[in-house]
Length: 427
Ligand code: ADP
Image 1: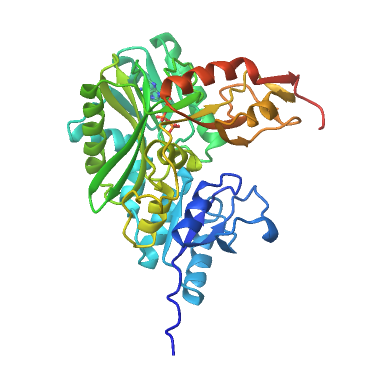
Image 2 (image 1 turned 60 degrees about the vertical axis):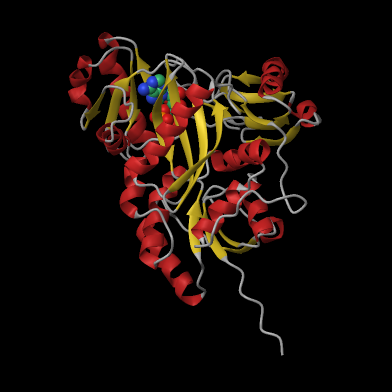
Protein backbone atom coordinates (compact mmCIF):
# COMPACT_ATOMS: atom_id res chain seq x y z
CA UNK A 1 0.00 0.00 0.00
CA UNK A 2 1.41 3.40 -0.90
CA UNK A 3 1.25 6.26 1.57
CA UNK A 4 -1.20 9.01 0.69
CA UNK A 5 0.51 12.00 -0.91
CA UNK A 6 1.57 14.71 1.52
CA UNK A 7 -0.94 17.57 1.52
CA UNK A 8 0.16 20.53 -0.57
CA UNK A 9 1.06 23.66 1.37
CA UNK A 10 -1.78 26.17 1.32
CA UNK A 11 -1.43 29.92 1.74
CA UNK A 12 -4.17 32.53 2.09
CA UNK A 13 -3.35 35.41 -0.24
CA UNK A 14 -5.02 38.66 0.76
CA UNK A 15 -6.19 41.30 -1.76
CA UNK A 16 -4.22 40.26 -4.82
CA UNK A 17 -5.71 41.22 -8.16
CA UNK A 18 -5.83 38.27 -10.53
CA UNK A 19 -4.80 40.58 -13.39
CA UNK A 20 -1.34 40.76 -11.76
CA UNK A 21 -0.28 37.19 -12.46
CA UNK A 22 3.21 36.72 -11.04
CA UNK A 23 2.46 35.47 -7.55
CA UNK A 24 -0.09 32.98 -8.90
CA UNK A 25 2.42 31.67 -11.46
CA UNK A 26 5.03 31.34 -8.72
CA UNK A 27 2.58 29.43 -6.50
CA UNK A 28 1.97 26.94 -9.29
CA UNK A 29 5.71 26.47 -9.88
CA UNK A 30 6.34 26.05 -6.14
CA UNK A 31 3.47 23.56 -5.71
CA UNK A 32 1.64 25.85 -3.26
CA UNK A 33 -2.15 26.14 -3.26
CA UNK A 34 -3.73 29.56 -2.86
CA UNK A 35 -6.88 30.54 -1.02
CA UNK A 36 -7.62 33.93 -2.55
CA UNK A 37 -9.15 36.78 -0.58
CA UNK A 38 -10.22 38.97 -3.53
CA UNK A 39 -10.07 42.74 -3.49
CA UNK A 40 -13.58 43.98 -2.66
CA UNK A 41 -13.72 45.86 -5.97
CA UNK A 42 -12.71 42.86 -8.09
CA UNK A 43 -15.34 40.33 -9.04
CA UNK A 44 -13.74 36.94 -9.44
CA UNK A 45 -15.51 34.14 -11.26
CA UNK A 46 -14.61 30.54 -10.55
CA UNK A 47 -13.94 29.63 -14.18
CA UNK A 48 -11.38 32.39 -14.69
CA UNK A 49 -9.21 32.05 -11.62
CA UNK A 50 -5.48 31.32 -11.94
CA UNK A 51 -4.81 27.56 -11.65
CA UNK A 52 -3.05 27.89 -8.27
CA UNK A 53 -6.25 29.19 -6.63
CA UNK A 54 -8.10 26.35 -4.89
CA UNK A 55 -10.61 28.43 -2.96
CA UNK A 56 -11.95 31.98 -2.67
CA UNK A 57 -12.61 33.51 0.75
CA UNK A 58 -14.20 36.97 0.65
CA UNK A 59 -13.18 39.12 3.64
CA UNK A 60 -13.59 42.83 4.32
CA UNK A 61 -10.15 43.32 5.79
CA UNK A 62 -10.25 47.12 5.79
CA UNK A 63 -13.93 47.77 6.52
CA UNK A 64 -14.62 45.06 9.12
CA UNK A 65 -11.31 43.58 10.32
CA UNK A 66 -12.76 41.90 13.45
CA UNK A 67 -15.37 40.06 11.38
CA UNK A 68 -12.69 39.19 8.80
CA UNK A 69 -10.55 37.70 11.56
CA UNK A 70 -13.48 35.64 12.83
CA UNK A 71 -14.21 34.20 9.37
CA UNK A 72 -10.54 33.45 8.87
CA UNK A 73 -10.34 31.63 12.18
CA UNK A 74 -13.42 29.53 11.30
CA UNK A 75 -11.87 28.69 7.94
CA UNK A 76 -8.62 27.74 9.67
CA UNK A 77 -10.41 25.48 12.15
CA UNK A 78 -12.50 23.72 9.50
CA UNK A 79 -9.79 23.57 6.79
CA UNK A 80 -6.35 24.55 8.12
CA UNK A 81 -3.90 26.45 5.97
CA UNK A 82 -0.16 26.90 6.41
CA UNK A 83 0.24 30.63 6.06
CA UNK A 84 -1.21 34.00 5.18
CA UNK A 85 0.42 36.68 3.06
CA UNK A 86 -0.31 39.87 1.14
CA UNK A 87 1.36 42.04 -1.46
CA UNK A 88 -1.04 44.91 -0.68
CA UNK A 89 0.62 47.32 1.72
CA UNK A 90 -2.43 48.48 3.72
CA UNK A 91 -3.26 44.82 4.51
CA UNK A 92 0.20 44.06 5.97
CA UNK A 93 -0.85 44.75 9.63
CA UNK A 94 -4.03 42.65 9.30
CA UNK A 95 -2.06 39.76 7.85
CA UNK A 96 0.53 40.03 10.64
CA UNK A 97 -2.27 40.03 13.26
CA UNK A 98 -3.95 37.04 11.66
CA UNK A 99 -0.70 35.05 11.47
CA UNK A 100 0.00 35.85 15.11
CA UNK A 101 -3.53 34.90 16.21
CA UNK A 102 -3.43 31.58 14.36
CA UNK A 103 0.15 30.68 15.29
CA UNK A 104 1.38 30.91 11.69
CA UNK A 105 4.67 32.39 10.46
CA UNK A 106 4.49 36.15 10.17
CA UNK A 107 6.04 39.54 10.66
CA UNK A 108 4.58 40.11 14.12
CA UNK A 109 1.92 42.75 14.81
CA UNK A 110 4.31 45.25 16.40
CA UNK A 111 6.81 45.10 13.57
CA UNK A 112 4.08 45.35 10.91
CA UNK A 113 2.88 48.59 12.51
CA UNK A 114 6.36 50.02 12.93
CA UNK A 115 7.07 49.41 9.26
CA UNK A 116 3.78 50.99 8.19
CA UNK A 117 3.85 54.04 10.40
CA UNK A 118 6.32 56.58 9.04
CA UNK A 119 6.60 58.24 12.46
CA UNK A 120 7.81 55.05 14.13
CA UNK A 121 9.93 54.11 11.14
CA UNK A 122 11.79 57.45 11.08
CA UNK A 123 12.31 57.24 14.86
CA UNK A 124 13.71 53.70 14.74
CA UNK A 125 16.02 54.48 11.83
CA UNK A 126 17.31 57.60 13.59
CA UNK A 127 17.92 55.65 16.81
CA UNK A 128 19.90 53.05 14.87
CA UNK A 129 22.13 55.80 13.44
CA UNK A 130 20.91 55.47 9.85
CA UNK A 131 20.66 58.38 7.42
CA UNK A 132 17.44 60.20 8.26
CA UNK A 133 16.37 63.67 7.04
CA UNK A 134 15.31 66.21 9.65
CA UNK A 135 11.66 65.47 10.46
CA UNK A 136 8.75 66.59 12.59
CA UNK A 137 5.67 64.62 13.58
CA UNK A 138 2.26 66.36 13.61
CA UNK A 139 -0.79 65.06 15.45
CA UNK A 140 -2.81 68.08 14.53
CA UNK A 141 -2.64 70.25 11.37
CA UNK A 142 -2.75 73.38 13.54
CA UNK A 143 0.75 72.54 14.78
CA UNK A 144 2.28 72.99 11.29
CA UNK A 145 4.48 75.84 12.59
CA UNK A 146 6.67 73.12 14.22
CA UNK A 147 7.76 72.24 10.68
CA UNK A 148 9.26 75.68 10.07
CA UNK A 149 12.36 74.71 12.02
CA UNK A 150 13.31 72.26 9.24
CA UNK A 151 15.42 73.16 6.25
CA UNK A 152 13.23 73.89 3.18
CA UNK A 153 11.99 72.46 0.86
CA UNK A 154 10.16 69.85 2.92
CA UNK A 155 7.82 66.98 2.12
CA UNK A 156 4.52 66.52 3.97
CA UNK A 157 3.08 63.01 4.09
CA UNK A 158 0.44 60.94 5.87
CA UNK A 159 1.95 58.81 8.66
CA UNK A 160 0.11 55.76 7.32
CA UNK A 161 0.01 56.48 3.62
CA UNK A 162 0.83 54.36 0.60
CA UNK A 163 1.16 54.81 -3.17
CA UNK A 164 2.39 58.40 -2.61
CA UNK A 165 -1.16 59.38 -1.65
CA UNK A 166 -1.13 62.99 -0.51
CA UNK A 167 2.69 63.22 -0.36
CA UNK A 168 3.40 66.88 -1.22
CA UNK A 169 6.41 69.15 -1.32
CA UNK A 170 6.34 72.61 0.28
CA UNK A 171 9.05 74.92 -1.01
CA UNK A 172 8.87 77.55 1.69
CA UNK A 173 7.46 78.33 5.12
CA UNK A 174 4.76 80.46 3.46
CA UNK A 175 3.30 77.40 1.74
CA UNK A 176 3.56 74.98 4.65
CA UNK A 177 0.28 75.71 6.44
CA UNK A 178 -1.78 75.26 3.26
CA UNK A 179 0.09 72.08 2.24
CA UNK A 180 -0.39 70.54 5.69
CA UNK A 181 -4.11 71.35 5.55
CA UNK A 182 -4.38 69.76 2.08
CA UNK A 183 -2.54 66.57 3.09
CA UNK A 184 -4.67 66.30 6.23
CA UNK A 185 -7.75 66.51 4.02
CA UNK A 186 -6.44 63.71 1.80
CA UNK A 187 -5.93 61.52 4.87
CA UNK A 188 -9.47 62.13 5.97
CA UNK A 189 -11.04 61.57 2.55
CA UNK A 190 -8.88 58.87 1.04
CA UNK A 191 -7.23 56.89 3.79
CA UNK A 192 -10.28 56.75 6.08
CA UNK A 193 -8.03 57.55 8.98
CA UNK A 194 -6.25 60.61 10.28
CA UNK A 195 -3.45 59.28 12.40
CA UNK A 196 -0.97 62.07 11.89
CA UNK A 197 1.51 63.54 9.45
CA UNK A 198 5.24 63.60 9.00
CA UNK A 199 7.04 66.67 7.66
CA UNK A 200 10.57 65.90 6.55
CA UNK A 201 13.37 67.60 4.68
CA UNK A 202 13.36 67.09 0.93
CA UNK A 203 15.97 64.64 -0.29
CA UNK A 204 17.26 65.43 -3.76
CA UNK A 205 18.94 62.88 -6.01
CA UNK A 206 17.95 59.70 -7.83
CA UNK A 207 15.38 57.41 -6.28
CA UNK A 208 16.14 53.72 -5.92
CA UNK A 209 14.03 50.63 -5.26
CA UNK A 210 15.70 47.66 -3.62
CA UNK A 211 14.21 44.16 -3.60
CA UNK A 212 15.42 41.90 -0.80
CA UNK A 213 14.63 38.61 0.86
CA UNK A 214 15.13 38.17 4.59
CA UNK A 215 15.30 34.75 6.14
CA UNK A 216 16.20 34.00 9.73
CA UNK A 217 17.57 37.49 10.10
CA UNK A 218 19.85 37.30 7.09
CA UNK A 219 19.01 39.85 4.42
CA UNK A 220 19.87 39.13 0.82
CA UNK A 221 19.68 42.18 -1.46
CA UNK A 222 18.52 40.84 -4.83
CA UNK A 223 18.26 43.92 -7.03
CA UNK A 224 18.77 47.67 -6.89
CA UNK A 225 16.76 49.59 -9.48
CA UNK A 226 16.43 53.20 -10.61
CA UNK A 227 13.10 54.96 -10.02
CA UNK A 228 13.69 58.30 -11.69
CA UNK A 229 14.38 61.60 -10.00
CA UNK A 230 10.97 63.05 -9.07
CA UNK A 231 10.99 66.69 -7.96
CA UNK A 232 7.38 67.10 -6.83
CA UNK A 233 5.28 68.88 -5.72
CA UNK A 234 3.36 65.59 -6.10
CA UNK A 235 5.16 62.32 -6.56
CA UNK A 236 3.55 60.22 -9.24
CA UNK A 237 5.53 57.07 -9.96
CA UNK A 238 7.21 56.94 -13.34
CA UNK A 239 9.82 54.37 -14.26
CA UNK A 240 11.56 51.46 -12.68
CA UNK A 241 14.67 50.06 -14.36
CA UNK A 242 16.99 47.46 -12.88
CA UNK A 243 19.85 47.05 -12.31
CA UNK A 244 20.59 50.72 -11.60
CA UNK A 245 23.92 51.99 -12.91
CA UNK A 246 25.81 52.66 -9.66
CA UNK A 247 29.45 52.76 -8.70
CA UNK A 248 30.48 49.85 -6.49
CA UNK A 249 31.03 52.31 -3.67
CA UNK A 250 27.45 53.62 -3.81
CA UNK A 251 26.05 50.11 -4.31
CA UNK A 252 27.80 48.94 -1.14
CA UNK A 253 26.47 51.96 0.78
CA UNK A 254 22.93 51.17 -0.40
CA UNK A 255 23.23 47.50 0.61
CA UNK A 256 24.58 48.50 4.04
CA UNK A 257 21.76 50.97 4.61
CA UNK A 258 19.07 48.51 3.53
CA UNK A 259 20.43 45.65 5.64
CA UNK A 260 20.75 47.95 8.67
CA UNK A 261 17.17 49.19 8.16
CA UNK A 262 15.86 45.61 8.34
CA UNK A 263 17.55 45.13 11.64
CA UNK A 264 16.48 48.56 12.99
CA UNK A 265 12.86 47.73 12.17
CA UNK A 266 13.06 44.09 13.24
CA UNK A 267 12.23 42.57 9.85
CA UNK A 268 13.89 39.15 9.83
CA UNK A 269 11.69 37.04 7.55
CA UNK A 270 10.12 37.55 4.15
CA UNK A 271 10.41 39.74 1.07
CA UNK A 272 10.86 43.49 1.32
CA UNK A 273 10.65 46.42 -1.06
CA UNK A 274 12.74 49.39 0.07
CA UNK A 275 12.73 52.84 -1.49
CA UNK A 276 15.58 55.28 -0.99
CA UNK A 277 16.92 58.50 -2.41
CA UNK A 278 20.57 59.04 -3.07
CA UNK A 279 21.07 62.49 -1.61
CA UNK A 280 23.58 64.42 -3.68
CA UNK A 281 23.81 61.32 -5.90
CA UNK A 282 25.81 59.47 -3.25
CA UNK A 283 24.36 59.06 0.18
CA UNK A 284 21.38 56.67 0.57
CA UNK A 285 18.42 57.80 2.70
CA UNK A 286 15.57 55.41 3.24
CA UNK A 287 12.08 56.57 2.27
CA UNK A 288 10.26 53.43 3.28
CA UNK A 289 10.59 49.70 3.70
CA UNK A 290 7.57 47.64 2.70
CA UNK A 291 7.50 44.18 4.28
CA UNK A 292 6.03 42.49 1.23
CA UNK A 293 6.74 41.80 -2.44
CA UNK A 294 6.51 45.29 -3.97
CA UNK A 295 4.30 46.71 -6.71
CA UNK A 296 1.66 43.95 -6.36
CA UNK A 297 4.22 41.60 -7.89
CA UNK A 298 6.10 43.93 -10.24
CA UNK A 299 9.10 43.48 -7.92
CA UNK A 300 8.96 39.76 -8.58
CA UNK A 301 9.06 40.39 -12.31
CA UNK A 302 12.10 42.65 -11.94
CA UNK A 303 13.98 40.19 -9.72
CA UNK A 304 13.11 37.25 -11.95
CA UNK A 305 14.56 38.91 -15.02
CA UNK A 306 17.63 40.38 -13.40
CA UNK A 307 18.67 37.42 -11.23
CA UNK A 308 16.62 34.33 -12.18
CA UNK A 309 15.38 34.02 -8.58
CA UNK A 310 11.69 33.29 -7.93
CA UNK A 311 10.97 35.96 -5.31
CA UNK A 312 7.20 35.44 -5.08
CA UNK A 313 7.66 31.66 -4.65
CA UNK A 314 10.08 32.30 -1.79
CA UNK A 315 7.65 34.80 -0.25
CA UNK A 316 4.96 32.10 -0.29
CA UNK A 317 7.37 29.46 1.04
CA UNK A 318 8.38 31.68 3.96
CA UNK A 319 4.72 32.49 4.69
CA UNK A 320 4.02 28.75 4.82
CA UNK A 321 6.97 28.06 7.14
CA UNK A 322 9.05 26.44 4.40
CA UNK A 323 12.67 27.16 3.48
CA UNK A 324 13.24 29.54 0.55
CA UNK A 325 15.10 28.02 -2.39
CA UNK A 326 18.45 29.17 -3.66
CA UNK A 327 18.40 30.22 -7.31
CA UNK A 328 17.67 26.90 -9.02
CA UNK A 329 20.19 25.51 -11.46
CA UNK A 330 19.29 24.95 -15.12
CA UNK A 331 17.46 23.09 -16.60
CA UNK A 332 15.06 23.12 -13.65
CA UNK A 333 15.30 26.88 -13.56
CA UNK A 334 11.72 28.00 -14.10
CA UNK A 335 12.55 31.59 -14.85
CA UNK A 336 15.17 33.15 -17.02
CA UNK A 337 17.43 36.04 -16.21
CA UNK A 338 17.69 38.37 -19.18
CA UNK A 339 19.99 41.09 -17.91
CA UNK A 340 17.71 44.02 -17.21
CA UNK A 341 14.02 44.51 -16.54
CA UNK A 342 11.80 47.53 -16.41
CA UNK A 343 8.37 48.88 -15.60
CA UNK A 344 7.03 51.94 -17.38
CA UNK A 345 4.13 53.43 -15.48
CA UNK A 346 2.02 55.25 -18.03
CA UNK A 347 1.55 58.78 -16.69
CA UNK A 348 -2.00 60.13 -16.45
CA UNK A 349 -0.74 63.21 -18.30
CA UNK A 350 -3.90 65.16 -17.52
CA UNK A 351 -7.27 64.80 -15.90
CA UNK A 352 -10.89 64.41 -16.95
CA UNK A 353 -12.77 61.55 -18.57
CA UNK A 354 -10.50 59.29 -20.62
CA UNK A 355 -11.72 59.10 -24.22
CA UNK A 356 -8.83 57.07 -25.68
CA UNK A 357 -5.51 55.49 -24.74
CA UNK A 358 -3.28 55.33 -27.80
CA UNK A 359 -0.41 53.00 -28.45
CA UNK A 360 -0.94 50.12 -26.00
CA UNK A 361 -1.88 47.55 -28.68
CA UNK A 362 1.21 48.30 -30.79
CA UNK A 363 3.51 48.23 -27.78
CA UNK A 364 2.03 44.86 -26.73
CA UNK A 365 3.42 43.40 -29.99
CA UNK A 366 6.99 44.37 -29.09
CA UNK A 367 8.95 41.20 -28.25
CA UNK A 368 10.64 42.96 -25.31
CA UNK A 369 7.25 43.54 -23.66
CA UNK A 370 6.08 40.68 -21.42
CA UNK A 371 3.03 42.20 -19.76
CA UNK A 372 0.79 45.19 -20.08
CA UNK A 373 -1.35 45.64 -17.00
CA UNK A 374 -4.11 48.10 -17.80
CA UNK A 375 -5.81 49.71 -14.84
CA UNK A 376 -7.69 52.63 -16.44
CA UNK A 377 -9.82 52.56 -19.58
CA UNK A 378 -11.83 54.93 -21.77
CA UNK A 379 -14.77 56.15 -19.70
CA UNK A 380 -12.79 56.26 -16.44
CA UNK A 381 -12.36 59.65 -14.79
CA UNK A 382 -8.93 60.81 -13.69
CA UNK A 383 -9.21 63.40 -10.97
CA UNK A 384 -6.52 66.08 -10.72
CA UNK A 385 -3.86 65.93 -8.01
CA UNK A 386 -3.72 65.76 -5.02
CA UNK A 387 -6.48 63.26 -5.63
CA UNK A 388 -5.12 59.95 -6.79
CA UNK A 389 -7.07 57.83 -9.24
CA UNK A 390 -4.44 55.21 -9.94
CA UNK A 391 -2.13 54.58 -12.83
CA UNK A 392 -3.42 53.97 -16.37
CA UNK A 393 -1.11 51.01 -17.12
CA UNK A 394 2.16 49.25 -16.37
CA UNK A 395 4.35 48.11 -19.25
CA UNK A 396 6.78 45.43 -18.14
CA UNK A 397 9.68 44.64 -20.41
CA UNK A 398 13.01 42.85 -20.41
CA UNK A 399 16.22 44.04 -22.05
CA UNK A 400 19.85 43.05 -22.44
CA UNK A 401 20.89 46.14 -20.47
CA UNK A 402 19.50 49.01 -18.43
CA UNK A 403 20.58 51.45 -21.17
CA UNK A 404 18.41 49.56 -23.63
CA UNK A 405 15.49 49.78 -21.18
CA UNK A 406 16.03 53.52 -20.87
CA UNK A 407 16.04 53.97 -24.63
CA UNK A 408 12.83 51.91 -24.88
CA UNK A 409 11.15 54.06 -22.21
CA UNK A 410 12.07 57.20 -24.14
CA UNK A 411 10.16 55.87 -27.15
CA UNK A 412 7.12 55.08 -24.98
CA UNK A 413 6.82 58.72 -23.93
CA UNK A 414 5.65 59.62 -27.43
CA UNK A 415 3.96 56.31 -28.34
CA UNK A 416 1.49 56.09 -25.42
CA UNK A 417 -0.86 59.04 -25.18
CA UNK A 418 -4.13 59.56 -23.35
CA UNK A 419 -6.99 61.75 -24.60
CA UNK A 420 -9.39 63.36 -22.15
CA UNK A 421 -12.75 65.07 -22.28
CA UNK A 422 -13.79 67.32 -19.40
CA UNK A 423 -15.19 65.16 -16.55
CA UNK A 424 -18.85 65.54 -15.54
CA UNK A 425 -22.16 64.07 -16.58
CA UNK A 426 -23.17 60.43 -16.36
CA UNK A 427 -21.10 57.83 -18.10
P1 ADP B 1 4.14 56.35 0.24
O1 ADP B 1 4.32 55.29 1.27
O2 ADP B 1 2.81 57.00 0.26
O3 ADP B 1 4.56 55.91 -1.13
P2 ADP B 1 6.70 57.72 0.53
O4 ADP B 1 7.25 58.22 1.79
O5 ADP B 1 7.32 56.50 -0.06
O6 ADP B 1 5.12 57.54 0.70
O7 ADP B 1 6.76 58.89 -0.53
C1 ADP B 1 6.29 58.76 -1.84
C2 ADP B 1 7.24 59.42 -2.81
O8 ADP B 1 7.41 60.79 -2.47
C3 ADP B 1 8.63 58.84 -2.77
O9 ADP B 1 8.72 57.72 -3.61
C4 ADP B 1 9.49 60.01 -3.21
O10 ADP B 1 9.47 60.14 -4.63
C5 ADP B 1 8.76 61.19 -2.62
N1 ADP B 1 9.31 61.56 -1.30
C6 ADP B 1 8.85 61.18 -0.09
N2 ADP B 1 9.59 61.71 0.90
C7 ADP B 1 10.57 62.43 0.32
C8 ADP B 1 11.66 63.21 0.79
N3 ADP B 1 11.91 63.39 2.10
N4 ADP B 1 12.46 63.80 -0.12
C9 ADP B 1 12.24 63.67 -1.45
N5 ADP B 1 11.23 62.95 -1.96
C10 ADP B 1 10.39 62.33 -1.10
